[in-house]
Length: 244
Image (tube, rainbow, N blue to C red; front, side, top):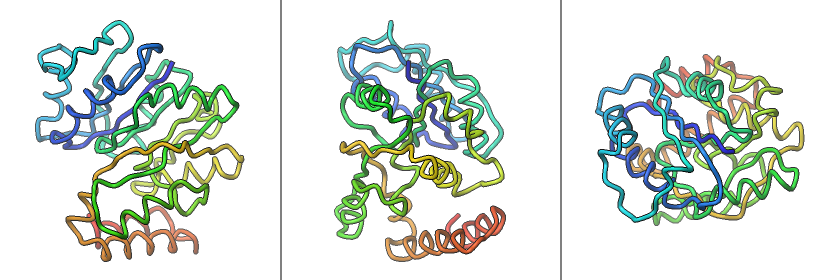
C-alpha cells in the first residue's frame, strides 16, 4: 500500500486539483491513502480538503476509487520537514510517497512506483517537467532524467519504503529549507535511488515570481553554500533574505 503525504501551507489554488488528479491518474488495482498535513493555512486550503473528504466537491470524471483510497487531513507545526515526518508517522503504507502540492504525477504513478519497489529499488523519484516554455526550465527539466545528484529536488516527489525511511530517521527537522536534499543525499550514500523515466509536472510559479535567472542563481548559491558546510540556519537565513 502507498501512503501519499502532502505538506501544505496556503495551497488553495492547487490542492483540490491535485486530489482529483491523484485519483484520476492512479490505477484501480491498488489501495492507497492520501495524508494532507497542514502547517496552518489561512487561505481556505483546509476547507477544500475537508469538502473533498466529505464528498461535497464533485469529481471531474466518472472514475470511482472510493473503495481503494482514503483521504485524511491532519494539523501540524509549520515546516515541511516536520509536516512530512508527522505524515509518515500516521501512514500505514509500506511505501511512502512525498509530494508537493503543486506537483502532478504521471498516469499510473502508483503502479510505476510499485514496479520499482518490487525490483528492489527502495527509493526514487520521477523526472521533472515545469509548466513553462522558458528554454532554461525546459533544459533543467530534461536534465532530471539523469541520476546526477545535483539534478535532484523535492519538486520531483520522492517515494521511499517505510522501513528505509525509518532507518534513516526521516527528514532532518533542523532544515527549514533543503530538507529534501538532505534526505536524498542519505539515499545516494546508500546507493538507493532510482529515477523513473516518466514526467511529473510541477509549477514554475516561484520562477515567475522572482525571475528565472535570479531564482536559479539563488538556488545554486544555496547548493554551493551547503557544499562548503553552511549550517541549516545559514541556508534558511539566505533563503529568507533573497527568496522568501
